[in-house]
Length: 427
Image (cartoon, rainbow, N blue to C red):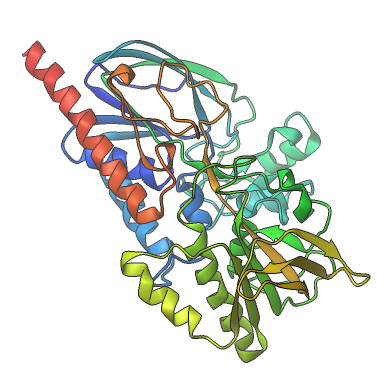
């Protein structure tokens, strides 16, 4: 059984992405007890799935590595992965929370040697790479996974392959007897940092995502460009594996649209500007990028980054909302629309089309097991009716990594204030 030590002076953080990790660490480093729960078998969230940050083009592994080192060194934080909050009762300063823990089938003895994966033949879609490739059913989620332990997929439990994985482990780390658990814990304050999900591009029917294999999303393109991704960093067309050197980026794919997402997701413009760098790095002057846009939202410190991309002769900007996408006989996507600068119709053929889909909060359409106020887009609002449940990061708004971290720090300070008030009242 999993043991969790928590009182009404404990802070519960729900979500282990960059915002959740930040909130947990900021609270723990003030001396507070923190329980951090994450539904995936690893921490880091969508930040871990990025290839690079804008505007400095540095790798997320740097910031994540620092946070993971802080987590490992801080005894005030207890991390529960494969964990999901199923119930919250009580009130500000006195919550009772139920958490469902799914089995990993691998215990803390794991050294991440990979022998279990060698013993397994079954493959499953690679969730870390947005399903663009496959991994063994005994797998390490990614190279910087925390905890650094393998996971056995439930699909092979009860089969000879699971027994083969157990037999292959020299350290006794495979535990096929693990069962789902439900634990109950106390918390004085809760930070809800469940992050965001990419908008479902299949809902944008004129773009034929899911039907045309060479129409992909921005998050999928991010994994293609990463040397640790499914193609080893080669930008290849899903249809035929051919190099994609002429790439279209369609902005506001579903965003700022009453039929889809009403809000601007803020990161999409900068994300596409960043991704034109990937094309240039892979192919030099042979790599051509076309950005179809309504307007480019790059403010403050991002303006210089935008200006440099705009000056690149290998990047073309077309002020237009692409009306539809078709496909020629060779599987090349064709973008149709009207360039509003001159009002000229176009039908441009590309090797690959990347849809800059926006972000919607993971809490949208999900019943948070407590009364929490949200806005028309589903983001958690700051409201006294929420009691001591505080939103953080992209659960509260469409934010880039930097602003998500700032939001998480603010949420941690609010939670610490609540716990301090409890401590004073009980002293």
